[in-house]
Length: 242
Image 1 (cartoon, helix red, strand yellow):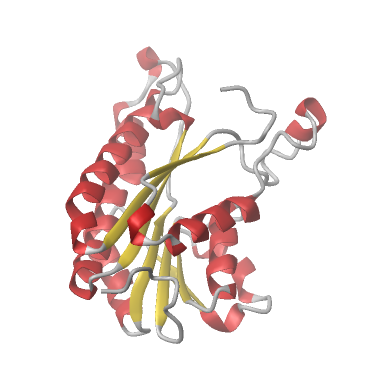
Image 2: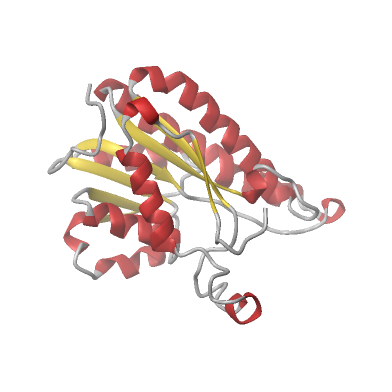
């Protein structure tokens, strides 16, 4: 068993689930730039089109996947098996439909839970099966402020985020002694993207988290020595109050 997984190369594979134009794409670029072959998964294939260009394109394998489907997630990881040894998995998917409890559609509440938590369980399970066999690997779950606090109007987000954090905690305690590093991040703020670009005028240029900076933090988690593993890492702009 290796002390770290950072020294893997050549046949090292990463899987990023929940790839979009912000953090997901940044994670794919950073992992590919680190020499890994990266399977980039998203429900909508159009979200993967931007990854078809750039210096790391030859290391990126796009894969459309409904992460709430056990069969689709199994197919995703079988495809990754063909590329080499699975060393890093990031679950970055989520869904949120704000609204009052009295108005929330039960089907929409269930959808948010399935995307935000159940899919995380499915991805984590497939990753764990392979990494335990290998005796090494890193699994990172992306959380949010709502992982720790359920605010008014945010039940659809807080419920799956709370649950995902619990899944990550259980996995970390179960898999750590087997050489698998499980981590959970708290993204405390909005990530810079076209969707939130308007906030800069209201809050200032440092008010949004930079996707590449977050991706760097994820790769640093992956490189940690097993004698000093981080379980939970909270990331926020320096101007964010907490």
